Amino acid sequence: MNGILIVNKPKNFTSHDVVAKVKTIYKVKVGHTGTLDPMATGVLPLLLGKGTKLSEYLINHNKIYEAIIKLGEKTDTLDSEGKVIETKEVNLENLRIENVKEILQSMVGKQKQTPPMYSAIKINGKKLYEYARNGQQVEIPQREIEIYSIELIEINENLKTVSFRVHCSKGTYIRTLCEEIAKRLQTVGYMKELNRVKVGSFDISEAITLQELEENKNNTEYLNKHIITIPYFFKDYPIIHLTEQEIKELLNGVKLQKNVKNGLYQIQNKNEEFIGIGIVQNNLLKRKLMLY
Image (cartoon, rainbow, N blue to C red; front, side):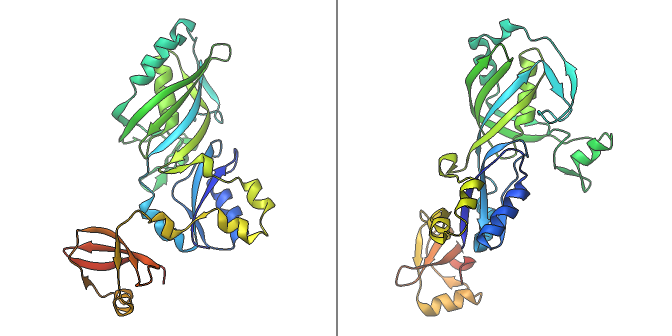
């Protein structure tokens, strides 16, 4: 079984837990293209078998999240798993719909963001959360991210929460975004809940749960049906047809003369069967990802 499986990660499971579970069910090599925090739920694309070679085509995908900010309290981890380190009054006047929408819109665009101290980013070969757990301070470099759109879902004055949906670039930390939104609402806050609803073109509507996989672990047809195959993933790429001899040469590392534009191409044989992906540079085609 080779390809991509879209899993709806449950709460309190690490991404590694999900990988291990899927590996046991499908009995193939399994990898992922980026983790989700244990408290987060939602879309987690997994790469199965030879699909693990697709990672470079997936790591830069934009993402869509739905999040809930709890206002009036700040935690050391910026999420619900941390301990409260600061409290501040929430002025209900600032929670007027017009004001909240305006503040959310002020977050749209390219910007510099400082990742949270409790994150897996490495500084000098050590993860940030390791520094945090040891009480050590370290300078965290900012990174450029982009918020493409952000919209209000709900305001709950009684619970002092704000729910929103955000479309953002790779590398965006929603915990940091929640902290900044709370600050602009003249209070403090932390990310109470997070659900990733889309990664690139992979939508939560096509995701499968671990429970569904477990219930159908002996149903090969069911398991296969939920895999996005490698040929399907590249279905919109332009095609180059090769003879059997050309395919043998390409598999042996020979570059083939092809007078076409630079870029990635599907490689198909004369029967229009998918062989793999090649890249053309300066009219020379070389192998990139082959299924054989």
